[in-house]
Image (cartoon, rainbow, N blue to C red; front, side, top):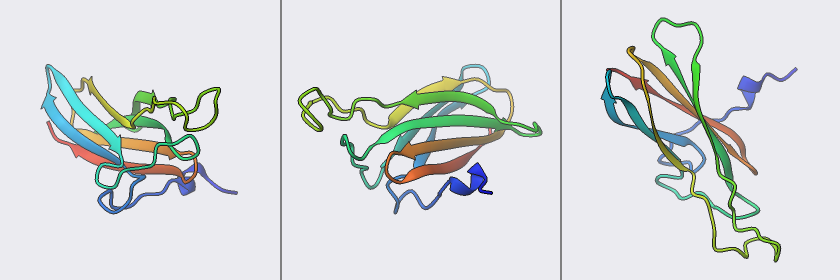
Amino acid sequence: MVNIKDLFQSADWAKEKHVPVIEILEKDKEKGVRIRVSVGKEIPHPNTTAHHIAWIEVYFQPEGDKYPYHVGRFEFVAHGATVQGPDTSTVYSEPVVEFVFKTQKDGVIFATSYCNIHGLWENSAELKL
């Protein structure tokens, strides 16, 4: 039997266009933690009807807690498709999100992404407040 954890791929994001890149932009116990998660930071990922990033999810596991918190899911639904056919629109979503969440603890931020051709990808970053 296959476990879902075995389906996730990871790599060095500077060499692989599918890995979600986590950037901690600001960290403050009162104002919150502002992060940006993107796919294709160094090597652009295709964004076509046939090949695109469909979503990014972000989790946070506070230090000492048993389970992570699901802090966000971001879907990218515009990939150039129209009633005229694939890649005929001028509207394309880019797999980049920026948001804020609050925590009082250090921990680990996890990000997962899904490419409609190449499957599930993951990455993590340590958060020290």
